[in-house]
Length: 194
Image 1 (cartoon, helix red, strand yellow):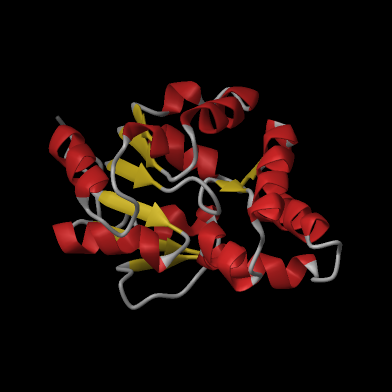
Image 2: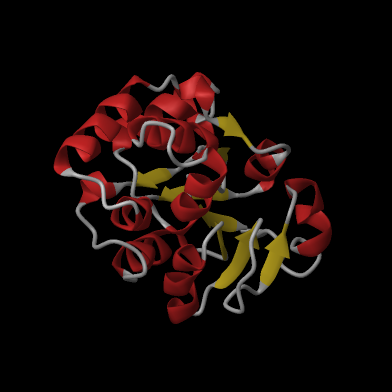
């Protein structure tokens, strides 16, 4: 099975660290829990919702750069799925250096055949261009993401979708924990034998 993964909130629990620095930029006037909910929609949604100034966005960017990669924890048992898959690829709006730093911190670089990041220049999700590129190259069987935005391009291309820790009518499958992956998904979608 060839799997296309979102990064933030799907492979790694990045939102708590981002919510912390976001709350800090807002002088702790907004709880991290509230910020987390806005970030789960998208980073740009949270920036717009809280009407951050250019100075606040610049401060947010500075604080993001200072985060240690180990502050982003991998979700339990996702590594077992990565080991099981034939090929794993990532499509994310994060920058390549940030993704590579987190993968290197956990020794996970070998699990991924290709990373498509904002540095590749593809339009942002839900545009299908990056997914089409990866699907043409790797014949993707499943897309896993934590937001509907991650699944919409796959659905448009006819690729099976899995929502992680969320709800969406777009999702073919839904998981709260990766320990359930093999019961929920692999029983219906088998890895390639070629």
